[in-house]
Image (cartoon, rainbow, N blue to C red; front, side, top):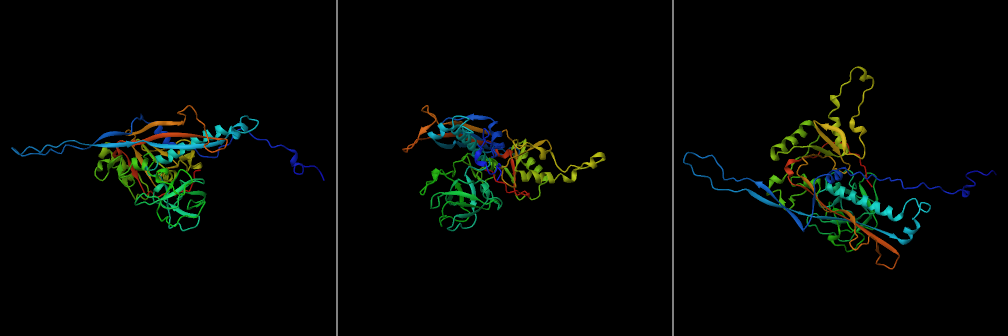
Length: 435
């Protein structure tokens, strides 16, 4: 029998390339944009911003010798802006740190690999929050979960829709259920997500779901395994304000930094719902509305990929080919060649650039006047080292160490009526899942 590569396989050593090939999409266009905006330093418990919400109404057209108007006054109210706190933790053994110190022993330094990865992971969670409205809803339970380990889900990010309900969940997430009407935790503690449907219609968890969990419960991420978890150790109402609250009429966030959008309609954004087929007319309605209400000047449009494709279809009948172009017609647009790491689609509506973000809600288009937007920062992102140490010895009797990373920020739109949102845009959504 001849000696071959197959028969003598045990003779060979495996050759490892240096480094780790990253398979994860870490694109965060909207967060990068906000980080480039006016950043305000933070001190104190909360920031109070005075806003003018009504005029002096003691004005009228009088007859000769008519009564003078009853005096009125300007109406001022207070926006009360709280800080929000994001944390992440790693835990590594001393053996891992020592064994991965050199290129000969490991393809990457174990401690540095975990630390760098966590910083990236926190930014992705901040990006998720920036497209939400402060509540932290990952999805809704679809139907009564029952007592098995599978739960159907819909409404990704709390936005109504049956497509890709598990869009913002991942294997390893610890989740709880919240009663929508009261904000109370359902009984049964946390469950760990162990698998997700390819089309995002359900998740599997590590233990049978408590019978108390119900249809349309908020599915919220929690800090870890805990059979008797408290709501304060979950994401619920602990996120910074995101786009669905910053540009809203009360549909998602009615108490906007302490001001009721019912009591003070001037704090509402223009929302056009049930759009259906996208058109230039409906976009212009949004642009004209914010100009009339708040003297808004829309400087950019933001949407998810499927809405961009819907926009492209509105231009199909405008393309003309003549002469040599007839031989090489091009059905694509500038969007087909855009850089996946950039938000700029290469397309415009008039002179307004269209930006895309894979975490934007399905079926929505945001028209933003970014002049009133700001980001408050108390800690731009750092490892906890107040005592001079980044690594802390484990409290248990084992030789390992933990490190915590923190990011404290808040997002604000001081004049919501200068931006608009289109909802219910007909588009072909692809159930893409970001790990």
